[in-house]
Image (cartoon, rainbow, N blue to C red; front, side, top):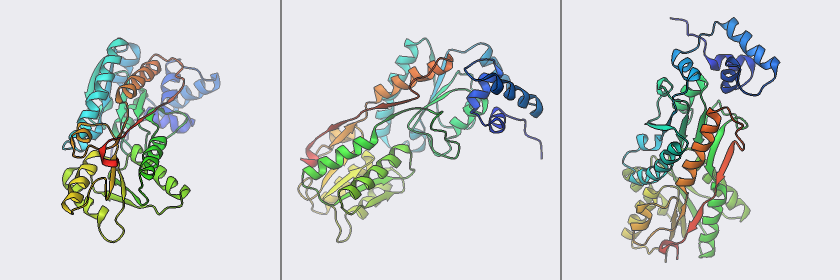
Length: 334
């Protein structure tokens, strides 16, 4: 068994600071106390830390290149609605990066991502203990996530995050369904659970408790059409058929539409259905789906602006940006 070379993360754990702080301290950059900077350097010497050659070349002369990782597409390539959302977001990321004189590299989620010579990364919809984030943390390069980090090494006060206000968005959808007459509303979600779905589920449960109504969450094994079709049967099975459903992914809502119509139920007469994300799917179903506009262009622009400020060692304020959403009411809940 070979001995592993100490990393920036190892120093960070010993010094009780972030990996980014260690990286800055070793380069005599950033704002920190002299005591912290000295402790970082002493620990690096004691632990025998040797800078990664790739990281050393980056800090000595920046590449003017950033990467963007979009794990949602790599995990579920059959979910074409995700592609539309990501393309809109990606276009905004590329445009803003060029405006700020940076090139863009598109990657999938991978533990090898830190080997690529870039100055920092945007990670969209990070997975649990996301390997791209871990790779960049190890070498002390900044990461901005669109959606919160999930896992054991989350430090909310230090993370750089751009996200939608899904708490408000969920409440808006549920309030709308209630106003249209729905009294038993089911939440239809899918594995794997990312921060968006976690926020949506938590907000749904809180909303049900506040309105003193029974909560019911139905999970699909994945957002793929096949899994969504199987799970849709469970949404309306038995005697507790809901009269309102909020689906977190458009493929779930589409599968539910097809299933309930096959059962002879009318939408919205018997059951009102809403979904998340203003996609072509939401616009092309019959009836068209009520949904929310997540404003991916604003998300992408905000993430790149935050990342490049961090790359340039500027004060990043705020470190958390929240982008609002808009409820788009269509025939499925009329």
